Length: 409
Image (tube, rainbow, N blue to C red):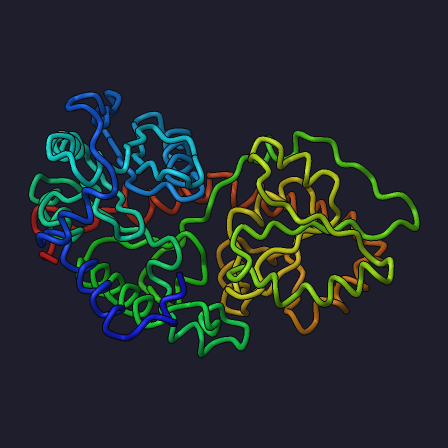
């Protein structure tokens, strides 16, 4: 549904309903998300006996909550880290320590109370994407839930994932290719939600993290916690060499074509195909288990062309040895350089230059060198060690503030 095509009064009603989850209409809307599982059948989080107990919840986008939990445990045997994720029917499914049906998350007060009690027994809770970890408990207020945890002595932190805290007006002003300049995006609501989430995080006085470096523009007091991929898994399929004189093998995985910029680059790609410069594999509906094989037969992955940043998909492709091409802001490249001491190996291109860049790569004798640099980069910054180090230094092992005396948000 393109909300820009709806009358203003309908959009106002939709937003008011979303902002009043405990109202009668809000309760009806929540019930439409599904009935909870039978009472007591969905467990609460359980931790090991380690002295430091960390919960990461509640979204697990791209499996990152799980990956960060495992990275923390690998970094310190005195840490028991768990993640919890809401199961969204029809969405992408990622492994998590605890997957909670959406109906239970929203509509089961018993599970909400049990999960809060479990989290209150943690030493640290990382709240993802400014979403309330305990569903509609405490009026579905993430600030109220965070404060309740702090009142129990839990050290709370926030982690922004992307659109939850990416301010559309700021992003649109920064790039002519910005996703937020697209007519399909309903800007008033996106702006309202991002501004609200930024305000919650900033007012909390708690440690802040972002999963992609572009978000440091929106949360300048945050620490970058890099996304994590498994380099061994993504390099598991042997690379298939490109025959001499053959076209450049290009892959593109438009999970969200408008967000990725697919319509903006397709005319150039079609010209390159017609000229025999490239072959193109549009990757859609391929299970994650088969993606290493897809990347193994590609020379280049075309990634993001509207966000100015990079994420999990680019890291997976680089770990597999693909040369990634995308539009990256100088702010992101600088953040990577400052954090890792390396240059981000993603080849710069935007919708206006993509044709020229791919023609040059098709004749680049150093393509294999670029491939190895990409693998090295992922092993340095995105295998979990840097992420665990960020969480530990800026939060878990930081003297910080006594959570009992943290400011109320």
